Length: 240
Image (cartoon, rainbow, N blue to C red):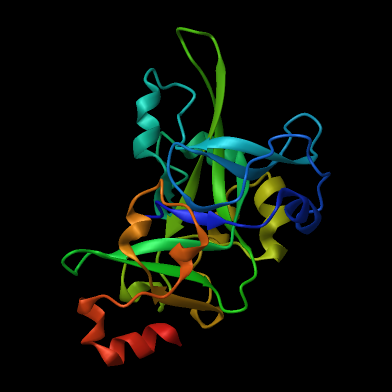
């Protein structure tokens, strides 16, 4: 799964990268430790105007038919393999796809005791884009509308597979338009493949990242626990 990531690129720069107008809203600050249930930046295609926009959505997709918003805690990720069949995601996959910008994400090697956190990013440090879905949900009591989203996960590449059996789907720029605009969702699952491992790097970081309220640049710094200090070969592999 992908349960934590960071986005340190400004909204102005994202607007330039994704070819959209600089928004007056949502004005979300950068974050080094984004967690589920928080507001996150997404790029959506407006259903009426068909124009891209930068919007803040709550992380944890609540299906339009759900009676309880707490379901969003279980839907922070959507599996690529079943995205067109799962009741929580199939309609959003067909009609409401989005892009979620990031410049790194965190994953934990759970075979270690305690589990060890790692940071994963592009070798050149550039930002990248998760494949996502979004949904509208109306609170049956207040009548208020809430927009939520989920990050799609799939099989890991060779790098991430060293610590975890899943990874978020990262879409290269040449697939952004198809993901947002394609009307034949039968072709879209072909885009949900592992990102090339040779373009990414991974390193162990401090367990401070385990707590969402810890949100500062030091989370990105390399950290060697006792568990990995005794495994020099493994560390060298992760640094490549």
